Image (cartoon, rainbow, N blue to C red; front, side, top):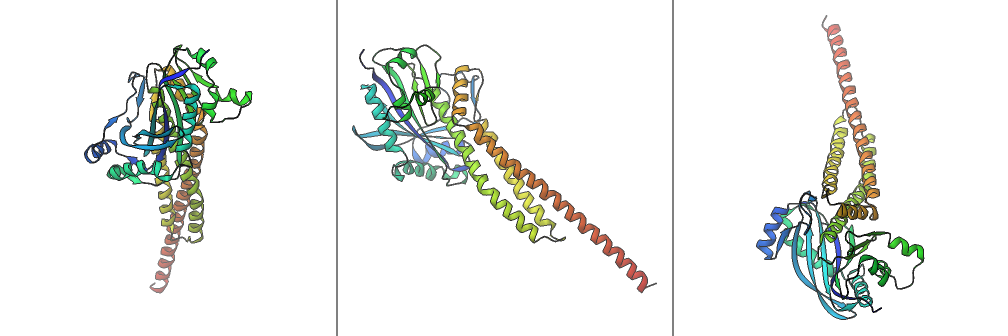
Length: 371
């Protein structure tokens, strides 16, 4: 049987960044249209009814300048887009169209692109498009940040082969493992089984296979819904990882502040406790608000197929583990806030008791001096 040829498809490399506490997408869309002259649109899934899948706040998709890459097949120009989320994340995507390539050539091209845009790529490769977004959209960003937390994801998307295989036939005729793993050496049966474990089909002729950092999507109808859902899931993971790292950095500082406050405490310094408690409460409120917005970024209700893929992506990305870590650290800060508030109240009560005692002593002294 002859090797399948990809007649229509693309490779999509995603790199996600946290750039702000929040982004006003209405202002951002206006700024991009006015200053950059580029195309923009509020994202909606292409084929799924709105009542089946709902964005909390639809992200803003914009078109950037293309980028030139050097690949083994020669220099190629890839289209670059960005998707901005109201909770402060931006997803940059490089799109390389593929046609007329055998399956083996397609896999080689995908792995070559992965190396070209991966961790060893020049800083300007992703930094250039990111700087363009930051420069134009700065007025729309609330409390911009330069976080080192990033997420990468690679998508191999095929819309058409030279034949029309079913999902079962496709799994028999092509080896997805080199695409999903990026490995050239033969993997063990256990490793192969793990890579292919999260696979889904709705019709007989479509297929989605998910891993931690890559996915393969065979979609003859050209829908991009699965790609969009995976991008949102990666953005949610990025934000949770960002707040997890933020709280990791904040907890030692909190302990130091509490220790410093207690060392310098006296009965007249209850305000220090109250001030620190207010600071911690503000942090908890902000992180809680943002994590709730992240959780509600996408609600999949009636589309069972997309719901399964979305849930599998969150499970594969270990989203629940990261979110549990954030919740645990928030609980520590809440408990510390409560303890500080109680100590501030106790200090005020002690101060009032001392004042009352002093007044009584003063009254007694006055009675003795002026009988």
